[in-house]
Amino acid sequence: MAGAETPSGCQAELEPVVSLVDVLEEDEELENEACAVLGGSDSEKCSYSQGSVKRQALYACSTCTPEGEEPAGICLACSYECHGSHKLFELYTKRNFRCDCGNSKFKNLECKLFPDKSKVNSCNKYNDNFFGLYCICKRPYPDPEDEVPDEMIQCVVCEDWFHGRHLGAIPPESGDFQEMVCQACMKRCSFLWAYAAQLAVTRVSAEDDGLLLNVDGMGDQEVFKPENGDHQDNTPKEDGPELGKNADKEVKAEQNNEPCTSSSSESDGQTVCKNENTKTELQSGCRLQELQAKQFVKKDAATYWPLNWRSRLCTCQDCMKMYGELDVLFLTDEYDTVLAYENKGKSEQAADRRDPLMDTLSSMNRVQQVELICEYNDLKTELKDYLKRFADEGTVVKREDIQQFFEEFQSKKRRRVDGLQYYCS
Image (cartoon, rainbow, N blue to C red; front, side, top):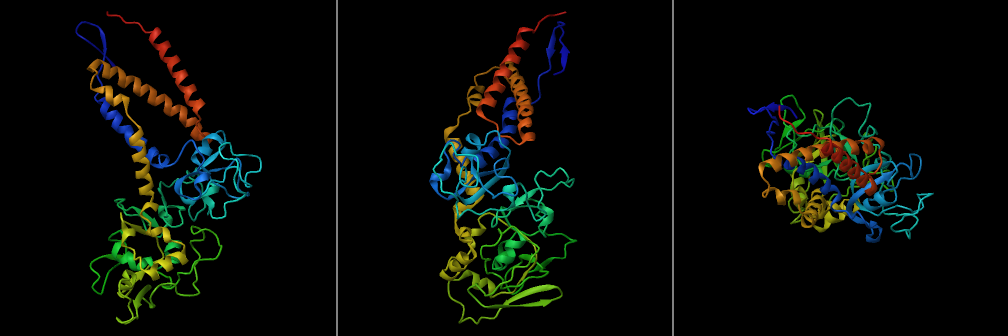
């Protein structure tokens, strides 16, 4: 920090223009993000005993299950206790997953926290994410060969991650959307196009000719003009690859699983879907049938959805049956969303956490605040550099590593204080 000479000739440090509160608030967002992902998961107990957990933070171990082996996922606690020195892929969160650590997929490792596991977890779903590959381009993230700045977005259905430029529809520039459904999942769950006409967040641009004003009294919502697709392709694949794969391949349906009959016609490159049921054929109370009775269009593209859009999905008997056949019943569960999981983690962390620094701030004078903020900045810089080594090597930070860091930091601090000289000229 730069120094200035006072009228008395003593060296004095310039006061920082940022307050301690500003610094703490600046880092609070990063801390909240970590709490959101990890806070809803147990860091000490293996989650296997809970069965298929509704949603939890997951990791894949490249050391134990490299590419070419069977994919496997491990819980947060096992990533610390059983794979601390291994190379891990962070999978963010997955739904309905049971920890694999130490089962038959791990040839030379026994789980330290819950060794008595079944050989396999047959209900778990896996994709290329478990080998550190994402999107339809099947590339790692971060990708050292990709020079194009692009964020990754997770599909709420297949839970694969995609580059924004590989979704067939550019994400809304404002970022004002809560969830995304990828191209492949929109093809497989084509009933969502009827909802998209009313609910989806669309990107409006002068140069984008893929948008069409909605018709037949459905309001001024804008929907994507389709390029291809079949209105009736809703049949789920049997024991095939995960939903995020082969987004460029068309999913062909053998039968119509939607609770109503509709037809599609192509005109000027558009697929315009019209419901041919008469009013007497429409079952009362089915929201999907009401939407499909109107004209709507589809496109080979992902869709972006606002907060609480799932609550607008029909839950009549026929629709619930269709969701089950498509294996998307979770769309009707408000606690399935990543947002619900993150809020749960934040609430649990807030209940257990008190900030001693903020608690004592009001009792400190200006000099003490300046000294504390300098110490805080030193700690922040050194800790960031220290943790970067682990990130570069892809290893997990263990408790002993943190203890070693603070021991070394305190030692450096003592050397600086002991060697400090104060003088006036």
